[in-house]
Image (cartoon, rainbow, N blue to C red; front, top):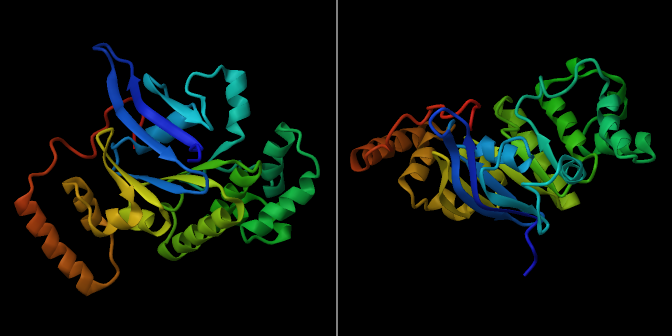
Length: 288
């Protein structure tokens, strides 16, 4: 059996405090195969973004381990971590703040190539723009000259620049309208087929992750409550929390929405809600 490209074992993330700190992630384990999309889904405060930050080395790993291609990366020295970083890239949520407004698109895309000594940079930039469906002259323009969906395409091109094995997609479509969202999701799937990149896709919307995922892990209060194939999670969720997320996903069809509301009311009468406030912030950072 092939070795997973990314493996997380019993991950614990804890932020300090006067009384021993706050545990944000508690014993999370999963594997990500090459060319696969595994989605982490849950409401705000569930811990999904914190897991992504831990994989990127931006959140403290208090327990457990994170491995990339069999090598433990959760405790690497900074110099070695920088080398691994080229293989694990990220697309952030907000396409308006994730791009430097003072740089042209070409400069944004050339920057990671220059840092790693990549040759034929201009040719690589043209190829990246073409891959994400932007014209060649886009390189001479600034991020402010593009729409939100186009800016996110630029961010995706930047993530692809170094041919990474894994891209962490942190709510990459939540700031976009429905039509643009669908186009960006389709682009991500097309790029995955062409490059074989694996996605760790982070979202609060079970409806969105159903469109892109091979497998889905459902997070609640820093722990995985259900994980499985996307088709199984979307059609036959086992955990009450997953069913509540499914009921919360927006549906355009009025009749389906009416039936969903009726089912939601029935579930509410049959199952007690989870303890505490689902939107509670439990640490000094937003542990989504």
